[in-house]
Image 1 (cartoon, one colour):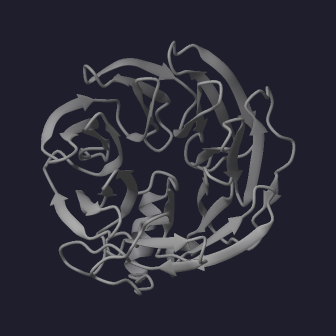
Image 2: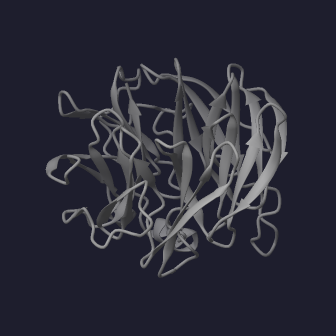
Length: 356
């Protein structure tokens, strides 16, 4: 399930009412994804209607549900994230406990990876031919996570080769400076960014941050930034930075609202972007204080669920989940906040992936 919302129990209840389906214009033989934007759509929890949308900015055109799993209808139950690596696309399907491997151009399915250890997978990073998959693991009888880890596999064969134990609730991954960084939130109860040495497959440091660390980026000064949302219902968040080589703490910037889970950086690496409610904020990486006002407000959005910045032109992409009651919508804005276009997505647009 999505860590962004912190509402996994509520989501379960909603899904018992809304067993919705996303728009289904896809071709079971796959689409031609040469360049553009992919949107990972979670789908309704337990409905197995997760999907992938492809948007071509040059043609302002979309194709829905471009990937089908072995069942042939959708991607599975809760598509958490997509990672591209050369000719491969890896779809991390949280509710189905699988990794779906597809061709990154046609999005034709190549294989499904399932194993007992891949229990509630979250994100994936490819490093030197190895796939690193963050996995929550099982719950105990009191719904506490008991065995979270980074599962390591050969990226070509997806044969599991190693497991790296982590604190409970490991989530987003970012490879920078020769290290793999993993934010560990566990619905805001944890406050750790783990540093993993992929040459040894070991956690070498657990860096303490504010509660609820989520999205991470690296800026032009080779500093890692992480957005820390707090726990469920928090009324404040923090932006924190530290060095990707020496792990020395940088700045801690207080936000007097609960930020969204996504953190983005401008194409030149000098400006950070993040959300709070329907507001999109910008902040220089040299700033020592939070912005006093948003860059702009996404007024047409009803349920801001995801956010991304195109690394080529700086356009903003905002995903509207519409409370998971129907198919979602994506809104595109220029870097100054001017509305450009919008297009339909599947249910619960959760991640934007920009392909050159």
